[in-house]
Amino acid sequence: MSEVMKPRVWLDMDPGIDDAWALVVAMNQSIVTGISTVAGNAGLQNTYANAKRVLEVVGGRRVPVVPGASEPLLTPLATAPGFHGQGGMGEWNVSTEIIPPEMTRVWTWWSQHAGEMNSTHLIATGPLTNIAISLLAYPHLSTIWASVTCMCGALPGAQMDKAQEFNVYTDPHAADIVFHWAQRVQLIGINVAHKAVIPMSDLDRLNRMGEVGHMLEKMLKFYSQRARGEGGDPRAFPIDDVVAVAAVVRPEIFEWREMPLAVVREGPLRGTVVLSPIDVRRSPVRVATDVDVAGFRDWLWEAMDCYEEESW
Ligand code: RIB
Ligand code: CA
Figure 1 (cartoon, rainbow, N blue to C red):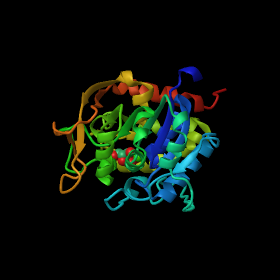
Figure 2 (cartoon, helix red, strand yellow):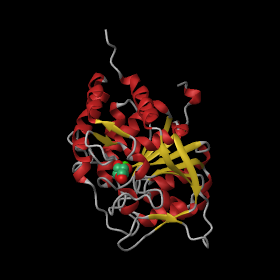
Figure 3 (cartoon, helix red, strand yellow):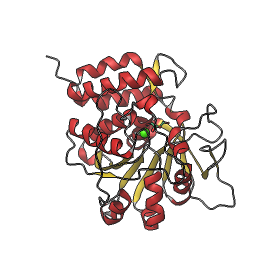
Figure 4 (cartoon, rainbow, N blue to C red):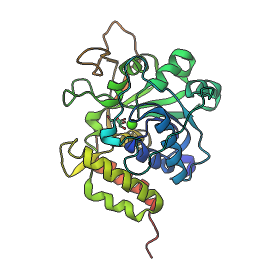
């Protein structure tokens, strides 16, 4: 894909193993203008360090990595070591980095660089805490993004089981603020992301992709053993965050519907995404209702081709 054709994106994420694969794919499918990290799968010091370590492997040292929130707005942080390991990267690498208290946080960074963000697509694959804070602190930031694609929640009514989706459950208040104030929001819910699963047998392909492939293979061996069957097939596993990148780079492989959304913020249904009450004016969210799974898989491995070692 020519550089001219590639969309400009900013990744707000909580790496996290599927976040890491989303970062790797975004680096060759789009122009990554920056990465911000948030507490979610692991603590902020881990997610910040992880984003920098993965960027080093994919040759993205020049991409700015900016820290965000170390806690959800109002709910206690509960990380996900069961899926992503203590440090967030499975058994690939455990790194952490002390973030100086005076270091600029991403909401301020976005406000200071708002003029450079035009035509940039924001892709959020962690809790939406950073975006919510940015909208409350600098309301004009709701207009700077070409789109705001969130991997979170589920299509109203499609929540597959009692456990709510991790990103919106971790910070339901932030998700509700984003659905209320942000514009041009797209939602990749877990009900659609869990359709685009990858066969366990495909992991072998990563071993022919040099250092990037070996990094992902080590992470995904850990993750796939824990996430297999989440989409219903025990021989396959979901990579939810990579689906969010596909939503920006290949929107045509999805079906979409527009609807105003809200989030249940407290109680046993905390984190459930619902149709917004009609008395609240909210910009409709473009919600993915289905995905062409074969089309997603074809796109993913085409995107990974550039890492394939020359077969002599
Ligand atoms: O529920 C899936 C989401 O939660 C993904 O973004 C995964 O990385 C975790 O953050
Ligand atoms: Ca994530």
